[in-house]
Length: 412
Image (cartoon, rainbow, N blue to C red; front, side, top):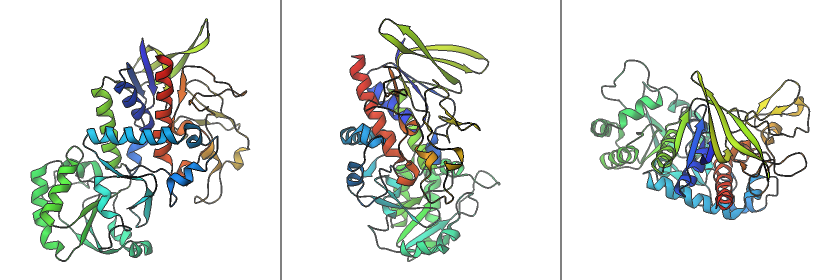
């Protein structure tokens, strides 16, 4: 029997597995598919306001930040920065003031912590004009469109420069991961930087699509800056996101290095058993690749996300289902009221999810914990429109740290 079973491989699940394995808990992580990190910008959003920490302090339950508490958020961020730093993916920032990263549309995104590749692109910190590098063979990044967005002028975008990619390995268009693997070859990166230099005479800052390596990202970034003698920064592309992939691989590597077993592919169905002290979660039944097997665990963390990632299912008869343990999800409106007409407005469906207490234990319809040894973290928790608020990664980190903190005390 293992100590902890984590179901879900997004940011919250991988971070929870890192935390439990670092504390010498025997951990298994089950993921049916890839989590949402490759759809993200790879930075950490806490709250899209001028002062994230003050905004978060004003929230009330059932918002996940209010339930987890400021202490778990701050300690969770501290652990996250330590883990990513250990894995060669350092982040910088703070909870009191947001940084800005340039997006693929020319707007600025408000984030609290950014990886090194975004640092030189903050329009609020550096005032030098930005030159955008264009790779003609790269899909999913259109710098000319970015340049024509009226917001780009306010963000100091000055011009687009066509930059060659020397002897690419394929004659087809490149996906972001293809280009990133090419930049992992540091000798190839040096050759390209030298070839670009004549094209960048007079450039003050260079913005490139976020494809500057996966395994050797920091080395590739340093080579470009040293060779070109100007600050270089990345701009997120359309998914799949290389910065998100870097973060996913760093967390996964850290979890596995500390003993976490990762199982990819099967569908998990929760198991419960009646014991002398009540009904407790006993682990999960896994179905996949033509076989079925059981994992017994002393505790389980549910990190399966919201509707987009399959953690919640909506039915035509106006119900919302949680498919792993069949936990109750309260729906107080009719299906026609689940969305607003404008995509820029908060969406009622985005606030749907499990009700949890301050220990991240899912609650029944009476407000009592369903199981003492079951925890829910991240997007499956209700009470927050994380996209509208810009709180997605912060909620993942705070709720994961809170759940693991309580889980550790209960196991000991």
